[in-house]
Image (cartoon, rainbow, N blue to C red; front, side, top):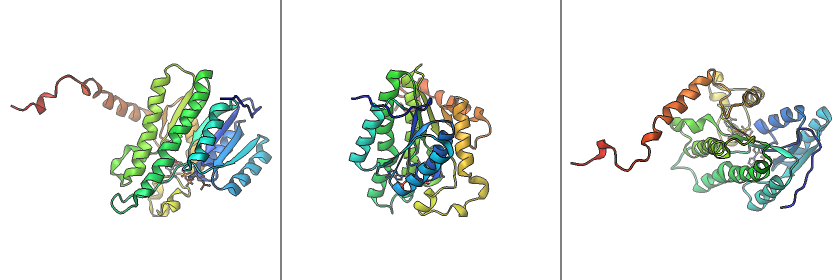
Length: 270
Ligand SMILES: NC(=O)c1ccc[n+]([C@@H]2O[C@H](COP(=O)([O-])OP(=O)(O)OC[C@H]3O[C@@H](n4cnc5c(N)ncnc54)[C@H](OP(=O)(O)O)[C@@H]3O)[C@@H](O)[C@H]2O)c1
């Protein structure tokens, strides 16, 4: 694959999916202010252009806009090719996502498939393209937007939650596979965050306890603080990081017994 380079910013360029609004748009603002050039991706070109114009004016960074529907294979493959080949790209924020279709029996299977295409397939293919770019150079950052819903199967969002559990698992597994590589990885697990995703998925965020809803600027700032602290998994509202460490340790206690030559004694028939 040919090597193209499009940024002269010292920090390189950050490619952000779902940058036209919400969490992605705030990442764009913060990463521009950190000196990254930007490549903003979403379907709504007018909104992307308006954000690009504001950020060029406010920060002086270069901002490119790519209109792409990440559930469209041709659009996705084109973006992957760029991401794998452009060595000026140093950051991928794998953010575009959809929620909804909570009722497993009453929802259209096509809605599940579309969600999986965006939240799982596109995230995986773009992370893979970024890894092919970053790992050989021992540099670069992949930030994946997961969700606390992926930790709570009881929340009545079975497919959305499963896609987000996948994103956290993928991030942890890549960290394990990349070993000592200097490539940085982070899974961000927001709780309820005030963005359009709620309206888009037919839910009313104003019906939620306001104590559970975070402002989108606060959420992204906390996620970036977690990134700066070197966290692999960041839960912006979690006061004590040790609670996460304990949860991981409890899971790791299962490991020695997860694959053995004999069934457990409790399953032995007489
Ligand atoms: N808000 C929350 O409460 C919350 C909580 C936990 C996790 N998250 C996760 O955070 C991420 C961002 O969510 P958000 O709250 O910022 O959502 P949002 O406000 O609805 O924004 C979603 C972004 O994704 C883009 N997008 C949607 N479908 C797309 C497609 N087919 N192709 C390309 N881009 C597409 C949208 O742009 P266009 O419509 O212009 O394409 C938009 O820029 C998601 O992965 C979400 O699951 C959100």
